[in-house]
Image (cartoon, rainbow, N blue to C red; front, top):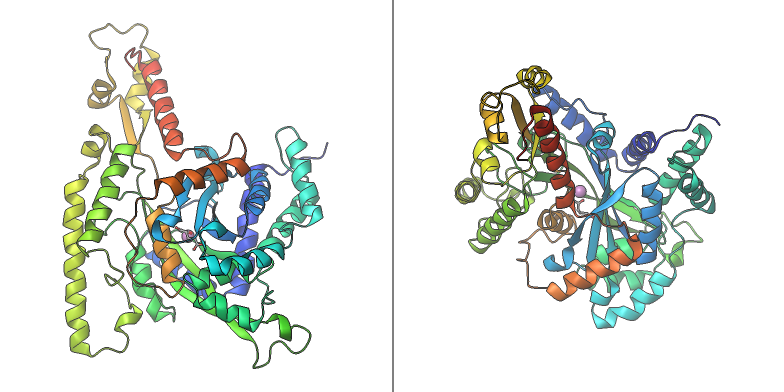
Length: 494
Ligand code: OOG
Ligand code: NI
């Protein structure tokens, strides 16, 4: 038996191959990568992990495509985690993120794919016939050979592929997600879709026969600096950074921003036989480059506080797209004085939001943990290790009887767990600002029936083990670390 390329190695190679492809397809992405490298170096980056983007995104057309995508990604140990209902932000899509589910796998190759899928039933009635006919024209998203390799890997105990199979598999995945300028619609249909609500999003899915990578997202340790730096390297930054405010001593969840989607040439159906690149060609604008900065994972209670503060901030108008830190396009042609006034107003709103945020979530780690707002990973300190060796002989008076006593005695320590998932409202903001709707994200409506529908639809295609609840992953990890420390120190009240 030849030695096999492991699922984690495959994931690493896939992320690297997608990166090479995307640099070619969207040269601005290479510019962003360079900027991120510079900024991270200046900030003495502690990101010593593999140099791969932390996530990418793709928009699929049908549940069948989602089913097959989940099998393809499963070969790389990327499992569906979390449910993102974007109907709550008026987008006709729902999503899940495929990612490794253990800390070791995540550390070795931290790559996720945010995978959304169209919900045709949410489209306006008069668009349904066109949508259905275009959906019928979609081609199978993977080649027969790639599917065969998926089966091979699935049937092999422990998974993995031979070196030659691995190359073909990675290449096959890239072909599926590559950009193709030939669209399957006519100019007239383009006009009809473009004019519809969420027109650019519908075009991005329905006009093409295959899906394409929508963006890649490297990690930064200084997102403000990257956002500010974009202008200087010729990138147009999205108006605002999504997620929690800046200037927190204890960063939580996820902050993201992007350069705005670029125009790419497309060739209409009727021009396909001739010189499609001539003046008759059209253009499509949906693909971009993004950056992310991750903080601590919040428990359900912490997350509830976060959602409440977002709702409150939105209500008070503190979270509009205009609270830009960077050279937002809305300021480009304004008179200097107006811009200064606008900038002052933006700064004031940011400050007000941060204050609101600080009231909702304490800004020191110990309080966040004690109030059960962040997930914690516990470990033994050196002193704890030494103590553990003698734990069986230790008298009950020296032995800690609770985790808190172990922490206070310096026998155990803890650190917040990193948030490995996404935020639906931030995702909606990212979608919208790159679809020429850079306005306020509508507040979450009460759409419980569509949430249940959406979850059921996705769960059906993802199978019995499909769609892991992210909170359960964090909880299991916290519990295990607690159990290990308690066992070592002889604490019986876990
Ligand atoms: C996906 C947007 C979601 C994120 O980082 O929140 C996402 C898309 O625009 O297709 O990638
Ligand atoms: Ni993204």
